[in-house]
Length: 276
Image 1 (cartoon, one colour):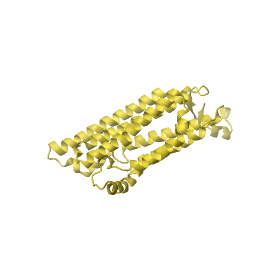
Image 2 (cartoon, helix red, strand yellow):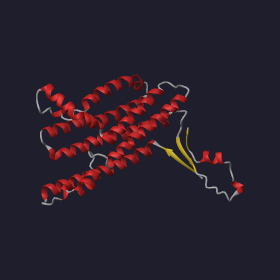
Image 3 (cartoon, helix red, strand yellow):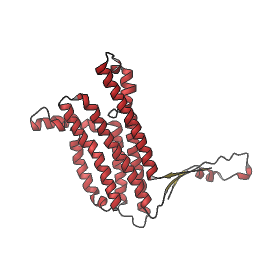
């Protein structure tokens, strides 16, 4: 028995966007409920562990190791897998130029997925904030309150320089899609992060969760659009008309000698094959 899974850019994009919208709505409902309980009732329900862990903690976009975090992590790993696939395809093509760039970009997304899951960037936030406070001789540094993105921006500049020639060599439509997805991601990861830093510095905490929701939303949409861009790139290649995951399952039993096949062939049939 054979099952074929055709990876289509439009179908994948719509599916991931629907999941994002569902999570976005649930996130808004959760923070709205928490705000209502805190400000318009005398109930202490929102401060209880059960509510904080299973309601706010489970669905809030800026939470750690919850459903939105796992969704973002899986999307980043999906990007990495597609980049490794493209690297392998380019390497075997008639023009194997830049296949190493595709490969190393895949590892960049593996790092981003790890960082998303374990919030590694937050390790640098406090020491960088302290250093900037000493540098500017003031406690309130506003937009730079969440200062983790300062060293990350330096690393990004170095990485960007390494990939610049490769990025500029991409086909026009692919280049524009990559740039747009990158701008969307950075608008959230850096732009909205700076805004949220300003919010915290000025004690405007009543709108903080809305700002962080926008921050994470930009990041998620940027990654989802990048996934679409990668699959679209694969679809546009002349040597690769479609990406098919061919899963073959053999249900033959030992009592059927007429359909018996060598054990090595059975093992081969049980493998998932990525065909071009």
